Length: 125
Image (cartoon, rainbow, N blue to C red):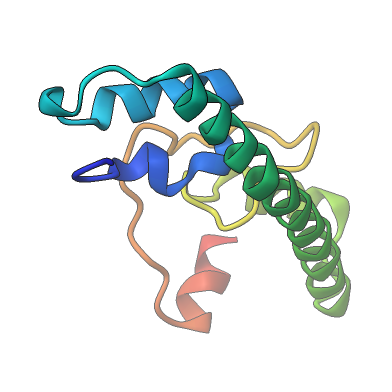
């Protein structure tokens, strides 16, 4: 039993099995006592049963998101230089990760204002 799962357990598929068990131990109330060997075995089994398909779906979604991003870039006729510029100035919380070799964002440690109009977006290029 866990009182409040917290962000790490809510995104448990990002953890490996040992980190998952450690987080469960951390989140359990002291009154619940230590985890028994049978409970540990059940947690590991449940983790593997749930996390493996979830990781596979996340990987599939990432591939599809990258393909969609490439299609949008192609639809706009962006050159490789323009795409590099987009990634170099992208906010740190992009829905998809940076492609391999993309330049680092100068905004990694700062908040970025949201571009609210196409005109503003063009002025940023």
